[in-house]
Length: 95
Image 1 (cartoon, rainbow, N blue to C red):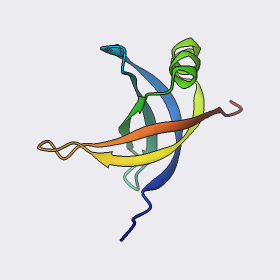
Image 2: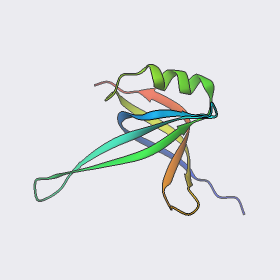
Image 3: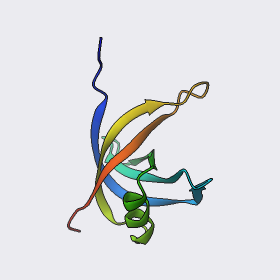
């Protein structure tokens, strides 16, 4: 059985300190802000991994807080249960 785990997310770029991991991939996250009914704002960060060199370079060159759309495949980390997006495409959105 084949499972499609493709996702597309949008939000604001958040650079992760020491985001370069052994030259294999570049870590960054997409920050999403969701208004709640009580007037507060929930801030969530979905960590993304860029393996392709052209995507690594593009994301590294963008300033913090750039609105973007990331498409890729969703994976979970064994043990921690955290979700990651393996970025296959990055599009800068208008501000």
